[in-house]
Length: 501
Image (cartoon, rainbow, N blue to C red):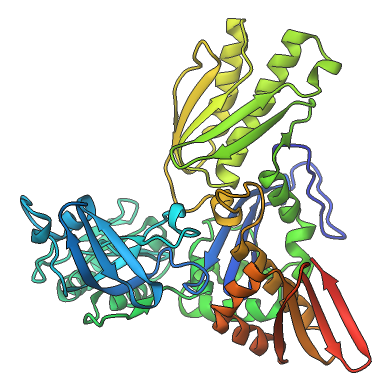
């Protein structure tokens, strides 16, 4: 892990040469689950969020009604029912039509009902603008990927694609079993290489489960997103490393689900030694705070800062206090090499995509530049998501491009643009729910009271289903009130237990 944060280990764990601490830890929450990959050295390497459509509309599939086809703006506006307003640009709208498109009205017409999926567009989440949508709704399973056809013609037959990693005999069997499903449902299916690790029956069951919401009759306002436990288990990487849960209840649920759906994971499930404090004990919370800080400190005393804009992400490398212990050229070289490793780590950990422009400290020696690019290439080569880069310009700038896979850590957790660096209302509310969930499971009787600033309580008030879920989890009444500071308390006559954020 980059930076100077060290992940603490659960009591009793010892890391000796040749051992690996690699594992995935999963934390179940109210409205949001989180997964973290811990690398072979015991440091957090990747953090993934799994949101319900109550928390975030991104990825949700909804049957929408076309409200307006605006030729002047080249946009199709839709009524997404419980999600509000959606918008589809011409490029996406024309995916619904075979052949040439002369007018936007060839792609959609007012009053029409169509199935769409909400895209990862961070710019609309805090502004109240229309949500960007695509007609190519897509569901990613553990063994199968299912997607709506792009053509508007409802009589089109779906296609089946099989991974080349499947043995020929397995491929023929799955082709025979799934081809009728693609034809009947009118959905494209992609069988992933992971399907080779399980019996055909589980692959077929998942294909049927994923095609059902995509091929069901259109009904305006219908909303679908996978269960959070399915999202978390689907995202678990291949291999034999442990998958540790932060609480017994979610572990029990996971064992039931894996036995029915994901048998390749069944033997890997276990409880984390630290229980509900798993993310703290494994240093994930510290790594998260380090990633969101204004400055990410490097071991030499240098530092880098990360700033995201709608167009690109800017990363600035600075000397800081590095000159105190080294000569100028050696200090510059050391800071740049440390920054290259840190940048490679944070691109993955923070899931930063799109165009990234990095301002390294100017170096004159050609061998120092070669060392920098070699170090960066080696670190980026370990990523599953490919990263392209340019050379280092005469001004010390390097451009990188990484495919977007969703919201970055900063887009998800920080306010934009009024108070950069501060947590947004959704992030504060979800953190508050997490604290309340922990406190609510204590034996002390009483009412669970959550207090927070008005923006946070307003966010919670707009999502009463999250409060109901917390009441069911804690088996007690929950009260939300407005206050200047964030706190969670259990209140009963004469006694109060308190946790302060």
